[in-house]
Length: 99
Image (cartoon, rainbow, N blue to C red; front, top):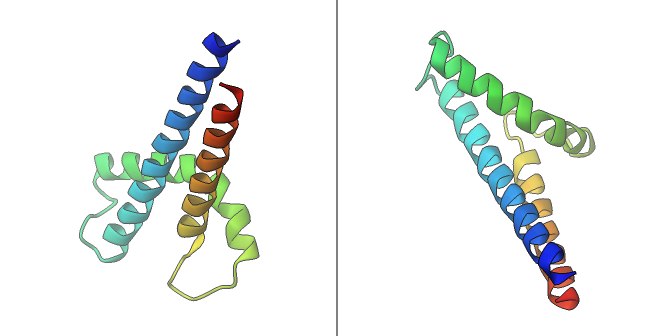
């Protein structure tokens, strides 16, 4: 059983960590576009921004519905990152108790 559970928790942890980095990249990309540092009329920039939006928006949308509107400040990536960190801690504790 440990032969399957250990690597499974490792893969899940890596997937959560990868999604964590995608959320940060999406937030940085949105700031760069908002500050007009990069322009989405560039096809490559648009493709990266569209990919990041499509990957992160399904998780951020429900959080945005719950959080109050603070104008230009979007706290949903921070809340999602905190949720992911909490999930990683829970999975680590479960994995430690099973092994």
